[in-house]
Each structure stands twice: as structure tokens, then as C-alpha cells.
Image (cartoon, rainbow, N blue to C red; front, top):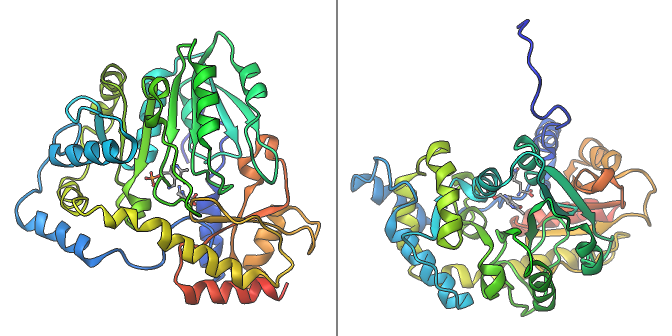
Length: 383
Ligand code: PMP
Ligand code: GLN
């Protein structure tokens, strides 16, 4: 036992729900629809490309901002999809997943006393990143159901201290997407300000029912102030590789790299080589919408005779379900009970809401083999 005395930088942060729920799921051998990761394999072509890159000797440090060939193909992908041209030399950086991109952007810009607006419920890495840098989180709670942003309310939260806004579309955990109108409203609100936007777009290729992903990079004024953050883990079924990137105008990216170079210097080199090759075929990411739409529909069709209520997810590989027709207990309690008594793991989303508001909904990840979804649905339909 250490007798050292020191003040914690994050005294109120608990172990992430993904770790605690995942551990409980493993302990009870539950079917795991909690943490967001696929339980099927990635394309063997991609795996072979990594081993090829290793055998070809790409085993030493990559360039600090990422292997240039990968940055080039990322830039051309963004230009094709969203019509924005980023300079791969100065405006794209490859990161250790989107998590590091978000953390680094926050660290590079948020000073002690700055305010950062987040839309709740939100992914759990945003707030600790703000707080560890001395910033103040300004939460805006979205309403249960449609999780729409009230832009008038949003506007009122902006003060002289607002340094940054973090948005996420498609949105984890709600599965809602921001529309073009939402992005235009956000653009008008931010236009007269100096606010930096972090746009978390890790589910950019998982959008359903012919909707289009409205990247911040599509909108001139938003793009001029944004870090657009993405994750290869989500797109290519390799969450364990922790590979992501972000795009931002050169001046902003310069500040980002001031931090990035000393936090990680560079990320896994052979994987970057492999991804650069793999990305040459755009079907590999463009087919993801329909791939996951089928999974969503398969899962929801199995749940249609259950007592859960839901609005189909518009994007991401998550589905929220309202369980109030079954029980009135709190979501954390139900989530635990489902794991221990019924051997099925989900995520209770109260921990992502402002003041842990309990909307009595659970989140299920449908990035799973159909047989896993069938087994899970059988349990859920019996409740
Ligand atoms: N943002 C959101 C909304 C996420 O769901 C995740 C989950 N992985 C991340 C960021 C982090 O992405 P990565 O695993 O690439 O760090
Ligand atoms: N993004 C994943 C999710 O929402 C989890 C990633 C993590 O465990 N940090 O489930």
C-alpha cells in the first residue's frame, strides 16, 4: 500500500461502463450485446495486407502524422463523399482510434476555465477529456425518444467562455442522426463565434434507410472550425486495432500535432500500410450501410413480438429499447439482472445522461452474428 499523497485529477470518474458491464458479462457467460464491437471476423484480405506490410519490412515508426499514402487516400475519400478538399500533408492526422483524436483535439484547445458543450447522452470519453484539461462540461440533455437538438436551447448555452462544442452523428447511444437542417442551424449559431467543433463521425458509414451522413466537412463554415474524427475500427470490424484519424484546417491541425507528436508520435505502421491499400476499393466501406441495415432489420424483426418498444435506429450499430411495458426498475438494475439471471448483456444508458437521468431504456449492439442476435432475441421475447 502506498502512503503517497496526491490530489486526483478526475476524482469523480468511475471505471467506464464498457469495462464494468463487459466484465460482468464474461463472469456470467452472458451473450454480450453491450460494448460496441462485432463478434464476426474482419475481411481476411485486410488481415493479409497487414501481414504483407510486416513481411515487407514496414515495422519501424511511421511518419508522425501518419503514413502519407494513407493520408492521401483518406483525403480523396473525404473529397469524393463530402466535396471538401483536405491537404494530406497538413490537414489529416492518423490517430490511435477516434478516442485519441478527440482527446488530443480537446487537449490542444481547451484551457482551464473554458466551457465545452456536449449533447447528452454522450459517449463516455468526452467529459473526462474536458475535465482533465481543466475545462468545464456544459451538458445539454436531449429528450428521450427522438433525441432532437433544440437549437434555441443550444444557443442559450453559449457564453464568452465556450471554447468548443462536441457533436456525434450518427449518435451513440441513441442511433439518431443529425439532419442537413441541424448542421445548417449549428453552422449559423457558431458562425459569429471562435468556437472549435469536434465532430465525432465514427459511424459515418453506418447510416440507414437511404439517409445521407451529414459530415461537418460538408459545410463551409463548420469545416473551417472542425476536427472531423473517424474510426477504422468501426468501419472495418477491427475495433481492437484502435486506428482512426481526423481532418481539420491546417492552422487547427498544427495545434493538434503540437500535442499529438508528444502523446503518441505516430501510430501502428504496418496497419496503416494495409489500410491504405484496402481503402482503394470504396465498396469496402460503402457497402457497410446495407450490411448493418440488414442486421438492424433482422434484430428488430425478431423483437417485434416482444414487450420492448423502439424506434428503429437511423445509424450506428446500436438500438435503444424502452422497457417500461415490462418493468419499472432502474436501467442499471435491469441491465445487471439481465446479465446475471438471463445471461444477456446490454448497456444502461443513464450513465451517459445528464445527472444520470434514467429514461428506462437499454442499448443493444447488433454488430453480431445472426445466430447471436437470435439467441439474444429469444431471451428478450420471453421477458
Ligand atoms: N466515438 C464514439 C461515438 C464511439 O462509439 C466510439 C467507440 N468506439 C469512439 C468514439 C471511439 O472510437 P475508437 O475505438 O476508434 O477509439
Ligand atoms: N464505442 C463502444 C461502445 O459504445 C465502446 C468502446 C469502449 O469500450 N470504450 O460500446
